[in-house]
Each structure stands twice: as structure tokens, then as C-alpha cells.
Image 1 (cartoon, rainbow, N blue to C red):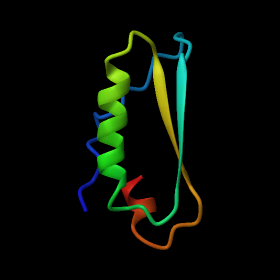
Image 2 (image 1 turned 180 degrees about the vertical axis):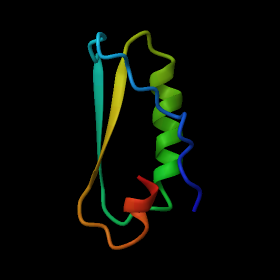
Image 3 (image 1 turned 90 degrees about the vertical axis):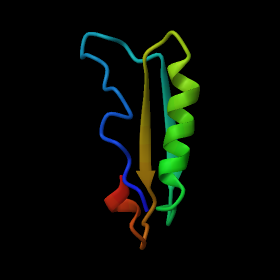
Length: 68
């Protein structure tokens, strides 16, 4: 498993309002998180708005919490 690069998601400044929130529930998805994170970043970065991605761990028993 590859860790998600720390610079993959930019946290908007506190003065900016969030335009889109992507909410991703995950359970035992450690292998898929880096792939999905890259796809979300690629898709959202092309838009002219502020966005955030919220990952919700639904009780994983694999390495999901470590990846997040």
C-alpha cells in the first residue's frame, strides 16, 4: 500500500468558503484509497472552486485508518 502524499489535498485558507465537499465513506479500503484520492484530486483540481475531501472510516479492520 502506498501512503497518500501529504500535499495531495490543499486545505483552503480559513477566509475561503468551501464550494464543494466530497464525502467518502470507507471500510476496509486501504488498497483503494490512494487510487481514489488521486482520481478525486485530478477531477476537482480542474474546477475553479475551493473544495475539500472528507474521508469517513466506517470501522475498518485493515490499514485504512493508517492510510487516512
